[in-house]
Amino acid sequence: MTASDFPPPDWPGKVTDDPGHDRIAACLVMDIGRADQWAAEVLLQVGKVRQGLEPSWEMAMNAYIINVGPDTTDITPVYDEAGESPVTVRTNDLEAALRAWISKLSESPD
Image (cartoon, rainbow, N blue to C red; front, side, top):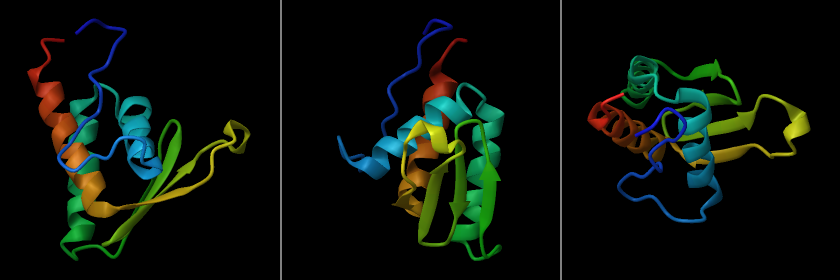
């Protein structure tokens, strides 16, 4: 993998052209990037919510704000000028995507 390209985000259950899954993929590339430690931290926080240890978790990142709930997560653009609407996804889809992304990053020699 070169410094300028990313692996295509993919995870078990990913649906092509699904707006929520597309938003998760964009969040992985634009907000998590190659930062495997950051991806692990986000996964840890998502896991705490899914396990009932925390009622919710919210984080503003570079491009998106995620508001994680036990069942659903809202992914909202940070900037209104982008013309994107908020999207709600299943939290378990976000968790699966994060796990797959971390795995893909660990395979990279970069």
